[in-house]
Image (cartoon, rainbow, N blue to C red; front, side, top):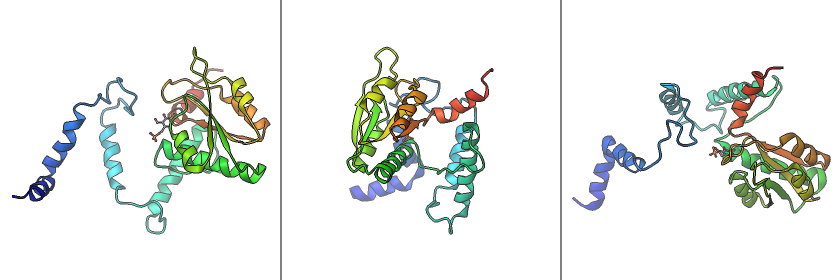
Length: 224
Ligand SMILES: Cc1ncc(COP(=O)(O)O)c(C=O)c1O
C-alpha cells in the first residue's frame, strides 16, 4: 500500500481519526476542574448539550438570512437575552459574533469610522491598558490604528483613569478598558475612563467578553 493510500485508509476510519485528535490533547492542561480559565459550567450534561446544539447548525451560513431564517431568529433571541441583564430594552440593537475577538474587532472598526466621520480623524490611535486582550492589537494592525499602550498600576493591575486622560490626543479614536481583563481578572475604572473619553468626544469600549454575562447578574443581586 502506498503512503497516500495508507493515509486515506486511516482517515476513512472515524475511530482512528478521533484517536489522532485525542492523542495530542492528552498533554494539554485539563479544562475542567478549575485549573485553567475555561468555559466549564460545572453542571453535568451542559457540555454535551452545547456540543449537540452546535452540531445542529454546523452546516449553516448565517450570512444568508433568506436561506437560513433560523439564524436570524436565534440571533434576535440571543441579543434580547444578553441585553436584558445589561439594562437594555426591546429597542436595543446588537449583533451575534463568532466570539470575543470578532467583537473586539468590530468595536475598533466602529470607533475608527466614528472618529473619522465626527472629528475628521485620519491617523487614528487607540488607547489601551497593557493588560488588554491581544485582539485589540490585531484590530489595530487590521484597521490601520496606532495602538498606544497605557501602563497599569503594578499593585492592582488596573489602569489609572488619570493616565488614560493624560494620553488622550486629538487623534484618539477609542479608549479600551476591560471588565475584567483576560489575564488578571480585574476590572478597570470603567466609569472614570469613559468619562475622560466622552469629554473629548471619544468612544470608550468596555471589553466585557467574560464579565458581560456575570457582572450583569451580580448587579441584579446587589443589596441596596
Ligand atoms: C476579556 C477578553 N477579551 C477578549 C477575549 C477573546 O475572546 P475569543 O477567545 O472568543 O476570541 C477573551 C477571551 O477569553 C477575553 O476574556
